[in-house]
Every structure is written in C-alpha cells, then in structure tokens.
Image (tube, rainbow, N blue to C red):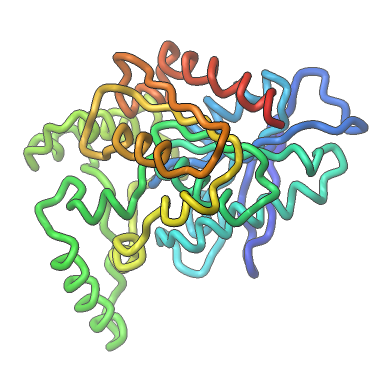
Length: 307
C-alpha cells in the first residue's frame, strides 16, 4: 500500500495505491480506480474491502477521497458537487497514465453506492476506462429528488438553498448539515426506521466502519447541485463499456436495487450483467464477508476478462 496524491485543478486529491502480491514495478498491470460512497472515504469500503481484494486478485488499485472530502484538498470543504466528483475520476485516469507499471489500455473503474453511480457516469466520457463495475450504485440526485429520508420535497429544499445562498452572499455563515443521524439515539428520536438508515448509522457511526475522513458533514448549499443531477443520463448512448452491476435484494430507502436495474436497462453496453446478492442489504455489501465475497466472485472474473 502506498499513499499518493494527484491533481484536480489546483489542489491535491488524496489516494491510496494497493498492489498485487509479488508486485514488480518493471511489469505492466491492469488497474482499477475504486470510488467511495457518498459521505465516505478511501479508508472504508472502496479501499479497505474492494480495493484490497482486487489488489490481492492481481490488479493495481487506486482508491481516492473525493475533492473537498477526506484528506483531499479543494476550495469548499464538505461540498458534494457531482460535476467535480466526476472530474476526480478523469484526474485519477490522468495520474495512472503517468505510472510506468500501469497498463494504460487496461484501466477499469468501480464504485460503491454513490461512487458506483459516479463511476458509471464518469465512464461515459472518460474512455480510458475500459470496464465498469458497480456495487449497490445509488443515483444520488434521484435519491434527493424523491425526498431521501426527510419530509421535504425537492422544490422546498431548493427554495431553502436559495435562501441560504442569499444569507451567505450577505455575509452570513455557511451552513453545514449532516447526511445521517449522528447516533442510534438520534436516529430513534427522529423516527427513522428504514433499513438503510438503521444500517448507515451502524456502519458510519460505530467502530464497524467509522473513520476520521468520513465526518458526516455536508454543505447545505450542495443540494442545488445534487438535486439536478442524474448519474444515468445518456447511459443509453454513451455507456458502452463492459458493465457488471451488483445489488442486494433487501430494499431500503436509498434505492440502490431500483437504480441497479435502471442502469442495467439503460446502459448501451453489449456486454452487461446484473447480479443480485440474495439476502443482502445495501450496507451488507459494504463490508460483510458473505455479501462482499459474493460480489467479488463476480467482479474479479469480470475485470480479468475485460481488462
């Protein structure tokens, strides 16, 4: 494992490279960019589970923190800007082409949750990505347009963002909100009983998955960028690379089961497959050995065949 940085605009994006056993820098390796979920970081599922396992299977992997998040730099900390997130992928591809041991004709991309949807979107225009894998890919714009786990409609949220931006333009403080409840007690007090919310709190706010790079903080003025985003727009025209989609059949409010099938139906890829992990929830596919092993049993041969 090696900590590295690469540039997006004028800041550094923090990343971790992981290598196959008996790695030889004089050889060329197929390489996979691994993208973290919304609110996550490279030390969680994208790097510590999937990036690690894919490296053990013979690939070089690169897991990175999104710009303005985790250990990465940027101009506005805690922002979630889909266009900027997709640019991170292009910059990751730029960086990999500078490494002599990376076979630039065998670069793939995969992501988990929001990172999966971003991976698919990035691959539409970043043609250096030759194969795409997604695990419980969630189209974050669709999630927020449907109200996510709040009672607010998209229009009411946008009106609140407009008011906040006016306040900030007049010298008011930035508003930092959160993605999920900060504790099990807070979740119960809010009456949030959906399986995805319950398990999100268990993953992000307990020793199970908690990491300093994932502080559960989000700029409120991100929502105008998120709500208008559709990760799968133009997939029927531009997403032509081989595609492996993984979902779990325990359906929760984040909607990754539905999004997985929507992506599968839309993608122009001639070589595409969707695999349902029976009995698995969204968060089981982040780190639970039985579910992640089944996902990797599909992803590893897929990438070996297509990179």
